[in-house]
Amino acid sequence: MTLELTSHDADRLRRVLRDLLAQAEADSCLICDQAGHVLVQLNLLDEDPLRVSALGAGVFAATRELARIIGEDEFSTVLHQGDRRSILIEAVDEESLVVVLFTGDHKVGLVKLYAPAAAAAVRRVLTEARNRSNTDGTSQTRFELEDSKSIFGSSNAG
Image (cartoon, rainbow, N blue to C red; front, side, top):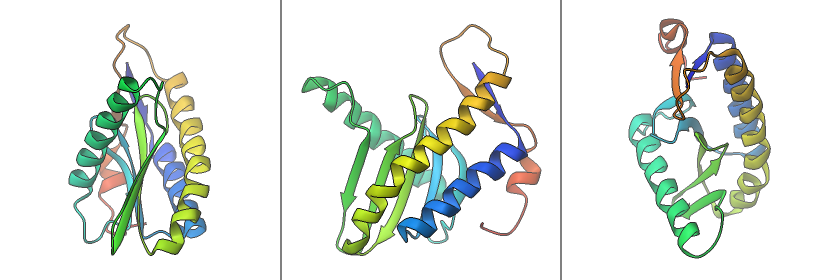
């Protein structure tokens, strides 16, 4: 199945990320698919968004398999806490993830509190886009942007 994201969809997704950054006092975040392709990102200034999303998706895939091995249907969240920076990966649905990078131990609770609501908001936007998209009968989802130049061509980060 192809999922076509319009510039309006991308703007809505960026608003969700802006709200998440403000509420959780996080540094940066992105939305990616399970293959690690970046859909939208905000404030990833020092990190390569493609590497963050690809590795985050890989970590999440490994975590899903670990959940299955121990008899869980799924783990919806992966949290890695470091001395200086931390990362939380929240499942949106079977095809996409929200990845949040943040500093400070005191923010872990805020990120864990607001990430599920952000994932639900992202899920609503993606569901609307799926409902608009034509299905080709396959079980895989491929994300395509209607006009990627207007989305990625701007120089501002958020």
